[in-house]
Structure formats: C-alpha cells, structure tokens
Image (tube, rainbow, N blue to C red; front, side):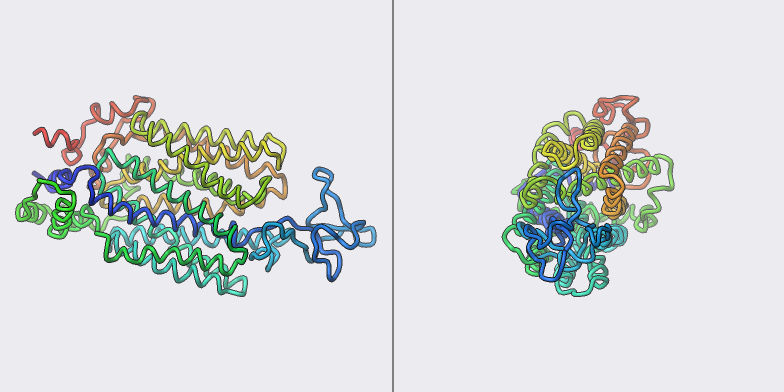
Length: 543
C-alpha cells in the first residue's frame, strides 16, 4: 500500500459527509458570504445616482432646475444631458453636478463626483480592489500550500476586518484607492482557503452540492449588500457594517481543523491521522485507523515527495497535459469573471430601484444552482459549464441588440446572470478537482487570479460605453462564447478521486475530451487507465 493509497483509504473511512464534515463545512462557507459583500461593496458605497449639470450656486434640487432653458436635452431619452449644458448659446462641459437623491443621499460618487470626465475615478477604485485580489490569489494561494489552509483562512479574515474598516475612514481619493487595493488582497483570501478545505474534506458524491453552496453563500452576500444599503443611507456606517461581517471568521482559529490531506502531503501524518480519528468519533463511526502503521507508511514514502512539497504555480505549466488544462481553465475563469462582474457592477444602469435590482442579481443566481445540483453529476462538469457559458454569451449579445435601458434589457440581463453565475460556480469545483493536492491551492489561486485580472479590467471595459453603450456587452458575449467552446477539450472529473501528486495530475484525463466521448462520465470512470493513487474508493473497499 503506497502513501496516497493509504490516504484515500483513511479518508474513505470518514464517509462522504458526516456530522464532522457538516460542521467544518458550515465554518468554511461563511467566508463566501463575506467575500460577496466585500467584492461588490462599491455598488452601494460608491453608487452613482442620476445626475445633471449644476446650473448655478444654490442649485441643489435635481427636479427643479432654476433655469431649465440652458439644459441640453438628450434626443433619445428626452432628459437633461448629465455632462453638458448651454452657456451663452455654446455647449460646454459641466464643472459641478446635482444628484437625484431618491435612492442615495450619501456615497463616494456624490462626494467626489465619479461622473462624466471623472468616471475613471470610480472605475479605478474597483479596479484597485480587483488587482488586490490578483495579488491575494497569487500570494495567499501559495501560502495556503506552504503554511496551511487554516492559517491563511483566519489571517485573511483578520485583515478583511482591518482594511474594510480603514477604507471607510479615508478622506482622500488616492489614499482610498491604495487602501482598497490592500482590502482586495485579503477580501477573498478566506474564500479560497475555505473552498479548498471543503473540497479536500468531503467525499466525491458531495463535492457538487458543497461547491454550489459556496456560490449560494456568495449570492447571499450580494443580497445582504443590497439589504444593508437599503437600510443604511450613509456610506461611512454602511462600509463599517460590511467590514464587521469579517468578525464571524475569527473564532475559526479555535473551531476549524487543518486539512488532513494537506498535513499528509507535508509528511505530517500523525496530525492528519489525529484529525481523522477525531472526525470518526464525531461521526459516531465504528471505523478505526491504525495510527502507527499509517505514520510509518507516510514516513517511508515521504522522500519521493520531498520535491513536490515545494511545488508551486510554475509546475502547472511544465508538462503538456497540465499546461493544456491550466490554460483552458484560466481562460474560463477570465471569461466567467468579466461577464459576471460586468453584469453585477452595472446594475445602476438598469431600469428600476437599484437596491431591488442588486438584490435580484443575487436571487437570480439561486435557480442556476438548483439546476447544477440536479444535473452536474448526471451530465458532468464539462457539458454543463460549456452549455451555461454559451447561453450566457448569447444572452449578452441579445442584450446588445435590445434598446438600451429598456425593461426587456433588464430581463435578459437577469437571464444572462443566471447562466453565467451557474458556470462560475462550476469552475471553482472543476478547478479544485483537476489540479493535484500538492498544487491545488496554487491552481485555484491562479484561476482566481485570472478572474481577478478580468474583474479589474471590467470597470475599464465598461467605460467604453461612452463610445457606444453596446460595446461592453458585445465584448462580454464573445468572451463567454469563446471560453465556453474551449471547455470541450477538458476532461471530465465526475466520479474520480482527486489526484495527489504532479505525476497523477499529468496523467489525469489524458485523451478525454468532448470529441472523444461527450458523455465524459463513463469514459472518466472506465475508459482511462487511472494511476494506482486514484483508484475509485469503492474499488479499494471491495479489494
């Protein structure tokens, strides 16, 4: 019995989802709720209300301008232009603005005028956060593999609280951008660590619903974002409330356990076995583990894994099959993120109550997760993610063809959000299953980095609407279509045990594409010669 065979047999005794896994999983998913809130906090904290040019000193009422004859009307909307007006029969750019305070009376956009020629300021603030997430994905993903998932989870939670509160106190724009960048580094750190912890703890049959539940909690974070925004009409206190949600992650240091798989991969077999023994007791299982034998097996085979303990992101690109999978997965992360945040960050441009629309943006994700839970283990990751990305891309192109700002546009945007949120939820679990244990956090971190890069570019892409309102949506649509088609070349992972070593990762899914077998599941379970370390658990138990 080799080292990884022993690990799979030991983990198999826990069952797929007992009382212990359930408790740990509840702790893990709280990080998804806070991540959703932090990621989109500018939607409410820096909301841009409807606005027009300020005509003179004392012009404060949006609906009753002192001299409407100098307002420049937009021929399409029959409303006053928000950036230009007449001065001495000449069209000039506005220098100050009056805001519609029907929904917002306090926001960073109102304080610093994130409108017209200053729109880049709001976009840059969101871009700074997302570039922080890029750095966090790289650094924290690597730290998860080096120092442990639990350590990074709790440390990121502490720093979410610190920088989330600090950003509320900043009074100067460029300081605000810098603090937003630091806020972004740790805003998703606990999410990444928590997701990997869950994927390494639960059994194969429960990974789908657990992965989807992470996305449900992210959507809950968006709904809470909208609810708090509706209740608290003060950008300072609102940001403080968002930051305080990170407090719920701090007790995890005492309640949450490290990943037994990670401990085992580090050669710390005794600690790994101790956690499994604790879990067996909580699960009220009659199974037992032979601690001395498992520890001796691990120590006897640790030497050949020494080099892999230092494995990192670069190892994802050193062999052909890992390279192909890594590039396609990174493309999927990139496209999913740019479409997801492109639709989410532009809720203020849709017709209706912005709080309700933001709340609905969270609610509309829930049906897609029901679809995933029902179909994912039946049709596989590959077929479902490609279908949902293609449909999400088509929805974006339909939006581009509809009249800008119409109610039908709002409806199709919601449909597009439904599909793209579904594919986004699959990509997390899919990535975690494609990458081997020794680089799993690095792989998920790399994918998250690509998503963050595209998320950082999304506000800048949205600025292209000054040329034509349809350009950003067309870009989103074509990216989703291209990436959805590329997933045909990835292997299926349903019903497969997780690869442990780099060698396992290279062999995993060789020859398995949609073009060799679109059903994927059968081929993954029967047609491919699995490495010994990835023999299905049921086969091990029968032998």
